[in-house]
Length: 147
Image (cartoon, rainbow, N blue to C red; front, side, top):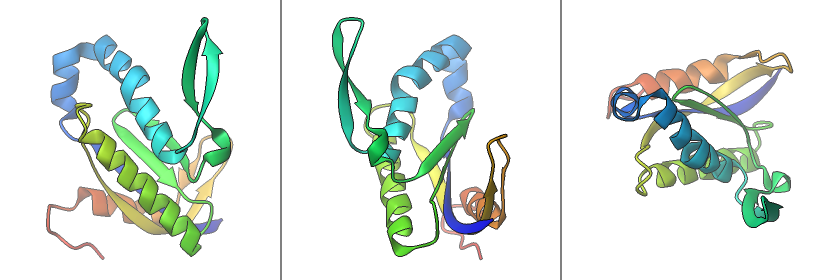
């Protein structure tokens, strides 16, 4: 267990998006737009690879500044520790994701950054007070302060 910063984001209007695009259409949006955006936010530098005979830009794993995962319309980022550098990394990653959501991708986000302990293991368990802190902040009404 360690202390870290944890950010949680939801896509605003997800229910309408799935009605509009259907499950397959939403899958295409995820694979072509949303997943690359959340990866770019976490890994801001790119490499060029050749795929199917074409040059393709892919995120550079060496530039990864936070860990990430997602489930349905919820995106999770968490830092490696609770240092100032880790706070800045999660802050700038979150800012990058928010910017991408409002740049014509039809996936604006709402979210919050929390702080506290976390347990993450290889079997997929992710829990702790940092998760709860961010979740409460994400569920707060606009203008409401959560302690």
